[in-house]
Amino acid sequence: MRDVNKVFHLAIPCENLEQTSDFYEKIGCKVARKYHDRVTFNFFGDQVVCHLSPEDIDKKPKMYPRHFGVTFTNKDEFHTLLDIAKKNELPFFQELMTRFKGKQEEHITFFLIDPANNLLEFKYYDDMTMVY
Image (cartoon, rainbow, N blue to C red; front, side, top):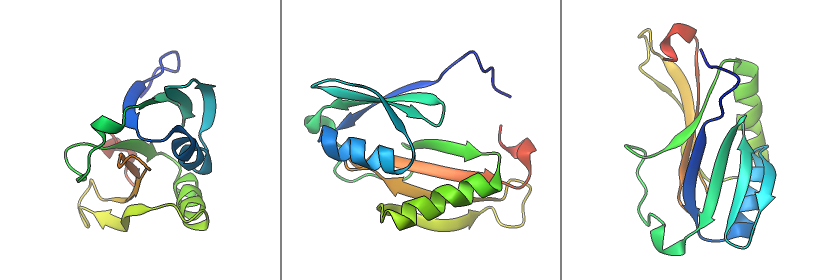
C-alpha cells in the first residue's frame, strides 16, 4: 500500500479562490494556506493546490482522461462523503454508479465537478486487491 511518510501533491487551476475554498471545505478538506493567487488544501491526507488561473479552465471537461480523487478503503466513509455532497448540494458530474458490474474490479463511484470544472472521482472497491 502507501507509505505514510509521503504526501501526494497535485496543482490544478481555479477561477475564483472563494468559490473554490467553499467547495473543497464542504467535502471536508481543510485549508492549509491561502494566498492572493492560490489556496492549498489537505485533500484526504494529500495536498491539492488550486492556483488562480482563469485562462486555464477547461470549458468542456470530460471524465476521461483527466480527473482525480480518492479511492476509499472503508465503504461507510465513501457513503458519508456521498451524503455530504448531496446535503451540501454540490454539483455532480456523474451520479453514483457501478462500474465493471459482475467483474472482480467492480466498484461504485461518483464524480463531482468543482467551480473551475475540475472533475473529482470518489470510489470504493469491494475487492481491495483491485485498488492497485
